[in-house]
Every structure is written in structure tokens, then in C-alpha cells.
Image (cartoon, rainbow, N blue to C red; front, side, top):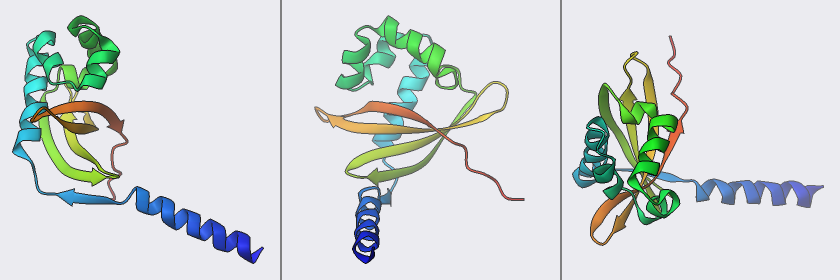
Length: 138
């Protein structure tokens, strides 16, 4: 039993270190890439918006039209935000994640994590994940 508890404790401590994160200084080029894609969405310019996507996303959706349809249906707050605010840039398990806070037309806040990759000297978006909004204590 003692070996089991020791083993579980060790495993949990090692797993926690895999997800350790470091908050980094803002990176204007990352923020510019994300803002430029959002600006393209606001113009329904899916061809330009698609250029900011990393190869993995481009391969998955194959065309700007498919990509645009996915964003309109799955990420409407990205397609038509009322406001965009950049949160922390974090390094997690070797990846860079930029938190973006979007306000939609109804005034709802949406927190997203953009995974960023350097491709041929340019920042590209490798994935976007919708985060649970932080709870606000009274």
C-alpha cells in the first residue's frame, strides 16, 4: 500500500510538471497575427483569414470557404466580435498560448486560447480552444 501511495504521488507530481506554465511578456507580432485574422473575418475575407492559419489547420479545412464556414458555425464570437482584448501569453509544455478575450454583440465575454507556431519566420495560429470563463467572486 505504501508503495502504491508513493507511486501515485510521484506520478501526479510528474504530470503536474508537464502542464507547468510560464507567463511571458506580450509579443506584439502574435497579437498582430490574431488581430489581423479577426479583422479579415469582420470583412468576410476568408481567403486572407486562412493565410494566418498554420499548416495543420489549412490541411484540415483545405479551402478558405470551408475554414470560414467552420468559424461562422463553431466560433461566432471570433467571426463577429464587438471587442478584442489580449490576455496573457503563456508557455505550456513547450507550446505558446495567447489568451484572447472577446465580447460578442450581446455583451457576453468569451475566453479563448490561441496556440501559436512560428512557421517560416511568421506567427501562425495552430489551434483555438474556448476556455471556461473565470469565476468572479463577490
